[in-house]
Amino acid sequence: MRFEPSTSTFGVLERIHAIWLLATCLLATLFESFFAPLTRKRRGLRAFQRSYALDRLPPLTPEERRTLPTLSGCIACGLCDLGEGLRVARSSGVYAGTMDLMLASSRSMPDFDAAMRSFATVPEARLAELERRCPARIPMQKVAAFVRAKGLLEEEEVRASQGAIATKAPRARGRRANAERRGN
Ligand code: SF4
Image (cartoon, rainbow, N blue to C red; front, side, top):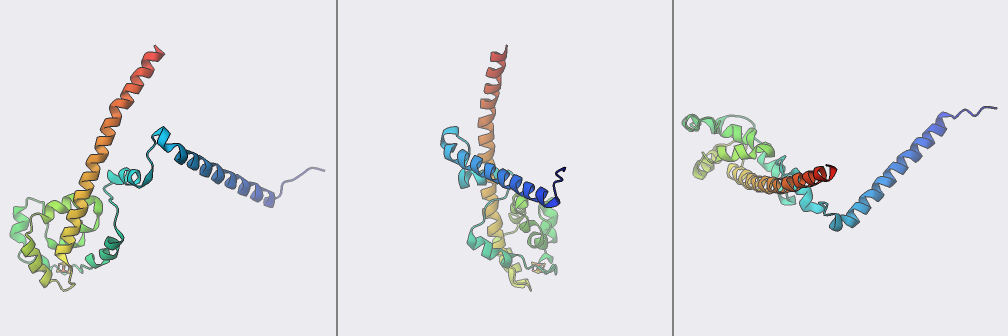
């Protein structure tokens, strides 16, 4: 009599295979973590943050996470753009109006470098004035402060990350050159 594996047998085998894969990955991760100080592999929160630095995605504190929804209620009425025409024209494309800052530029963290330059063209006193005019009560000065703080942090992280890459590159080139010499 020939043995015909049933669908349920395949199901069980697939499950065993999946468990085996997960278990080996877990063991490999634990092993790597344990020997990380010896192998000098990057581990931990700092390394995690560094790996996102070039994407310009700095971490948020719990307090910032709670504040974020209060910064993004712009209803696009355009009232804060009234009287900003001259500043927009003088900025040579850096500043597209306050509504743009509140509605778009300040919502995407990877673009905070551009938003910072845009905010720099609007004096704090003017932001306070526009804030009073806003029907949605957007805390414009708070938005500007948040963008500046995160934008500066991003720049710092990007510089640190690029520095780390630049330091590693000559070492890697050196290792390659040594390997080539040994091969000759
Ligand atoms: S006045 Fe307030 S709600 Fe209107 S566009 Fe400006 S930020 Fe948005």
